Amino acid sequence: MMRLLERSLMDRCPIEIIYMTSGQKCSKRRILVKRVEKDYITAYCYFRRDVRNFRIHDILAASPIHFHSDRTISRRDYNK
Image (cartoon, rainbow, N blue to C red):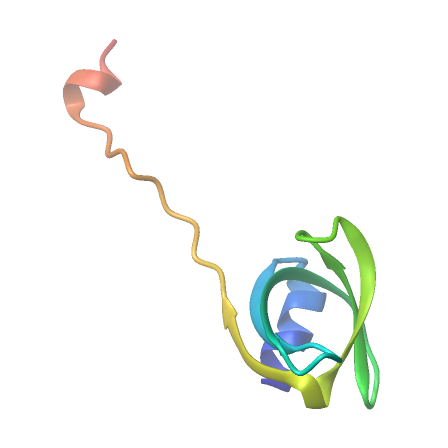
């Protein structure tokens, strides 16, 4: 997981995390990592629209976000 957090920082690409809040509830967040420290990360949270600190110990899962288009371009579209 640390590798993915560092990759988000270096490549400036958002990731999705499952995070245990202080109220012991799971929360799914889309974040962009800004800084990685020993015990926590600083990241822009798209849900809160703000820079937040997340304890690494409370991140239960992390995954890259794959962007894809629902539309494929046919030759007919290309020639217009």
